[in-house]
Image (cartoon, rainbow over all chains, first blue to last red; front, side, top):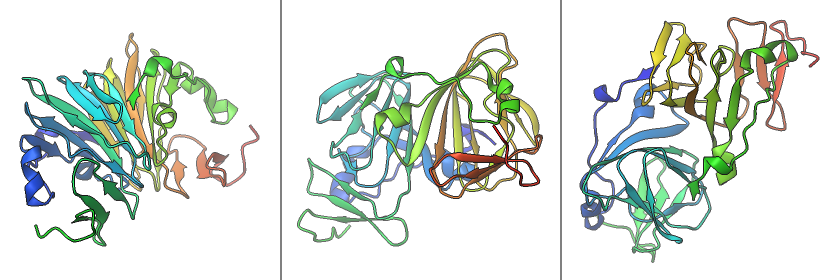
Length: 154
Length: 154
């Protein structure tokens, strides 16, 4: 089926614990893949307002990620430093590669990109810059803990 | 890691039985995801010369597919008929949906698109227009049979 993004709702909320939510204000995601009936991987159309970012810097133990930039210029931050991605550029973040990454919109214009990620079970996400670890919950969602293992309350 | 398509080899061969190979002459695939280290899903940058097509019309029992058109105008053929996809347009083909689909370049210009597909095991592909079924081989490759179950020799 042809995907019609204009008919797909946009989510601006975050599942992060409250203290991290402000970082992703200005981020909107449309779950294109879910709406189209895909189950094995997610495809989101993501819009980042100036100053917003894709996520906290992180890497996954079991799930692969891929992004394709459609509009604007976005800064990829990872262990290699900062690199600008322009429309048509792509990046991949293989599962198990301990290189925390995120995309930050340091420009004055909107950034739009596609993100693809699979749903391999028992995934964990590590956040090198923050006191945060994400584990997989039985329902497919996430459980967030501090690095000492204690749960976040929110 | 940032993906540099200009450094990634292009494959123009097909694994189809010999009698079907001519249909995809003019198709070139660059395995961006594999080169970048992704394992859970494939991401290919595909170029179709005029007259070429993505594949025989088919659907998968277990594997999801997604495509994003980058350049040119390509015709999506499925049970709904023929629809033109232009740059920036996307389509999804959920596993188990018995709607054979392929992309055909009926234009006079090159078509470029991204295709994403996962690697769920025990997948089969059905080809409604052709005497062909594809099953998963133990090595992750494909075994092609006629619809009566006999193997193709080539």
